[in-house]
Image (cartoon, rainbow, N blue to C red; front, side):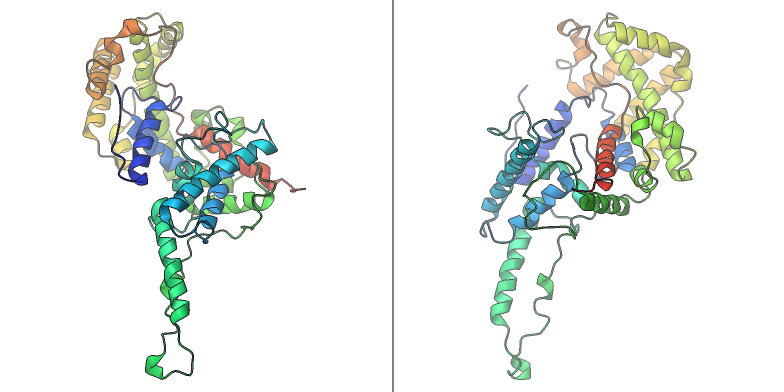
Length: 400
């Protein structure tokens, strides 16, 4: 199947790329359509993050580029400025690799210096930049920000030319506040330096790390992300979200503890469905899937015990189809009716993909040794850990 879209604008193009990325991200394949719940939990625990963020430095590289882009150096044409932003992001990627060819998490590593990526750093990090108050969020997209900034710059220049001197008659003077509407502060960047491109590296400076730590805590109030940073939790001692929840659930506030409990219980239910999916897809030939199901068998009733009403209500989700599927699946597992559970899984995939594209209708076409559709739910634990580790490393850095 080919997928296309009419490219009315950069925003339309970006929305299409967002959808495509959800289908192609490693480890994020959503065969059973539970991504809406998984992502809602992830946004609750780790707001401002995404599965394709790589390093914390981009939370500052992107603002530096966007701030510079509207200072007049690229002229006034919005489309030209947007192209210049793209070029600048690519050049920064090249600089990062030149400073350390083995640096992890540099966006575009596999294609630079000749090629570039479809999902730019500014696309990947924009939501987080707004969430954390690095950009003073006016609900703007990047093209809207550029367009507004250029309009304000033009108005500011006109206001300067138009202001009359104090010797004019009172009713002929320009209002002394004439430029106030132009004094929009887009950025909260107290650490910006004109020479930030010099000696650019993927690691945060001490000053940058301290700033990001503070901004993320302010922008992620009440979240697990805030708690981790505020209490200097070492996430490296945890293998996954479940192990972290087990350790921290008695330490965090009651509401957050309850949501962590719900997330772990939801994972228990979904993981059983994913194991059954792989058992069926491989026609019981995938040894890992079969072994996992044998391990889970004695726990099926317990693992199906999640309050789905609470999950959807607390996350403010309104998706009747997903709720109905999960409720029926839960009932089947609780009754130990695995045949009914399998049939529900098959039906769900057909509803989402259609009969011809559903993998469970074409089991002979797939490598029965390969796992498909994701495993335990991560809720962006791994991505958040990478960002937090960058901040911790920068905070102990002397920048020497």
